Image (cartoon, rainbow, N blue to C red; front, side):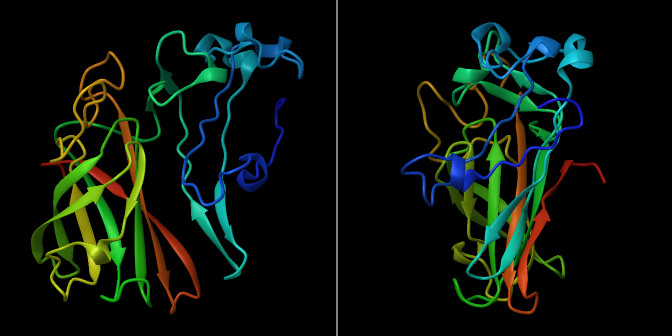
Length: 250
């Protein structure tokens, strides 16, 4: 793309064979080739490193929006996009990024031992019927495991519960299926500390939550959450961004 240009990206059309129904995320980055980039050389190894601040005048910047189109339900769900400068492992080639390449994104919350994520839910107690919520969790680390959290209703009543995350960087869970959730808790928030290692966390080369995703410190990393709420009274799918704060801050 050149200055002030808009380009659409259709994941269904560009994902390739066998990716139907798969969850994932995309990373878009500006390469360092600057004004000399052409269609022919944009992905050449020499131009495939991340643009720096010094490149900004020639390489430009990117911003975007994303939506999930549900043709059957005639609904369009907003999908959050995180922007801001990327931190990648040293000497990362943008054409061959892997699961460990992305260290942090400036627009997401920075992982810290005192970070608290607040995730909204709105349910009716019957799974996959009526009011339903899906909470998506994304991070640059490995958050596989069972996380102990506080769940609150809309009257500030609290209960300690657990929820599992099965995938390392992009995962989701259904708050309606949380064991131990009081039946009356149908509208409220879940507070999660992503900087605490969950039970059942993987051991070995990749250790939850953020160690070994890079040679940087354990508190290095980015995280964000959002809730997708389906409610007949809305007439459409709604997306609510998760909030974050450091514990003790108001």
